[in-house]
Image 1 (cartoon, rainbow, N blue to C red):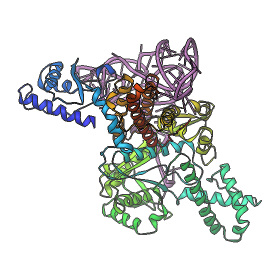
Image 2 (tube, protein in one colour; image 1 turned 90 degrees about the vertical axis):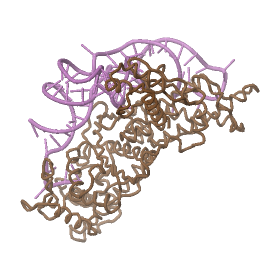
Image 3 (tube, rainbow, N blue to C red; image 1 turned 30 degrees about the horizontal axis):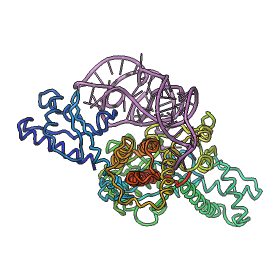
Length: 554
RNA sequence: GCCCCCGUAGCUCAAUGGACAGAGCAGCUGCCUUCUAAGCAGUUGGUUGCGCGUUCGAAUCGCGCCGGGGGUACCA
């Protein structure tokens, strides 16, 4: 990868300068920063290394930069290494070298862009994990898109990634849900029955009650209410999970595991965890409940583990669940993707790790800000309880899965975003995803028309047009983008890269004709067919990383 | 009250502490007899909420205000 090579060459240059006495022998190098200058005229990469060293060396930054440049080793990769005011060192890649990279990309195929940052680290990304008490809404879809794309990116960055959905199939909310299912079922049979106060009032529960009544008749009236609620709750749970799974599949999200909260209590996991916490002195009984004393390790407040009615609360499950992740299943790194409404919980999760004797850095809580939902400018307050929803399914049907993913992906997780359903419908045809996909389809069309031409022997060194070079340059950024997105857990960078890449292709398409019937064009045609084939590969790769389709025609 | 996130073009948002702050959409002007016009070229639009600091350099870091969102349950 280019960045690593430049890093190595820079260090070599500094050492050479030191040996020649041009720089002090004792010099602590900072971490080398390499970036793409905003202005193309400044070159492909730049480093402020000399600016950082100037103070230590006691000389003007520009002088230091010139000294490093003077001792910079020769390499075929670079056409120019230049010191620039106030003290940057700018690197310009050689055109010949760039052109040859088309062959490198084609040889790498689908693995082009992959890096070995993760070194196979066993990593789990847990995302969405909303209560299975209703359909997925568009806000949860942001979680799905961030989590799924991040998992893709980490995979490409060399991590061994496992995707998981945590099902809250027990607890207060689940009980409310089961109670609602029972009441709506009874009502569907024409019996007057009041809704539980904390029930789920959405239309979809009425619908579910009707279905249950139609399928099972009055079967559940002939057993104790408690038993009927339990059984109906199970059926309703199963259906809701199935519908959530289908909703997620609509936008191309699949899991390796759907993990049941209940299962944590079906073996001795929970007991074991309680023993560890007790041994660590983190458990206290008070007010009839059992508490996790987070305050002992600097937490802002203690948390209930076992409620006064004897049932474990969500935090007890969370601890057992993470014990299962790290100790039982041996994940080295776990990322939980959470909405910002769970942020207060983050410090306690870190304390929990300490209490379990695990390194808190092995757990990353990735928070994304909530989506403000609007319908024609009016804010829609989301609630499954009251039933006011904009469902993911509804939006996908209106706008299409790729546009939904692109929209939700293109903002940084920490930025709040507005989603206006009416606006999304209106503008769906203008979604940038089509710009990217169109570039892919255009290439597919060229390759179809090229039909029988065997371009395998094409000479890529013929690719010297500025638009050709610019396009290849853009492709060479892919590994850097993957590294950026992976290290900063910021998959939104992919969307911007995809647009830049498509833009570079469209410019090439304008300037350089690929197919020609003239005999004298044969060589350049073959070279350009290689170029567009490589571009198609990279576009498809980026689209796949983002979980979107790469159409052959549009 | 305290804690967390955010405030950048008309709108939705990008921008590792780096060089002249960028896209998409919306607006305006042009370009289809040759590989897909879902495209291309040009153009309008900014005191990066306000103030003070930190340093070679601040949209980015610190402090104080102002504004928006979220949290502060024996819900999850």
